[in-house]
Length: 81
Image (tube, rainbow, N blue to C red; front, side, top):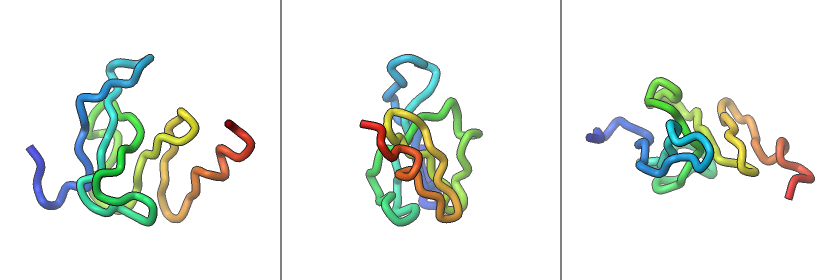
């Protein structure tokens, strides 16, 4: 069940190598580059990412990346293709 104040939901899409982790999806615009409907990285439970604030777990370069306070995952993937 979702409520208006939730920023994400945990989907049924399990991680291919770690099936206890499930992908998140934004329910509303969270931050620049993360709009409603955007798929994020994987979490084990709602305890892994707060529903408050603008923090987001991105799925970047096949790895999880925590975005918070202006951090930029793209720098971590430079040169990786």
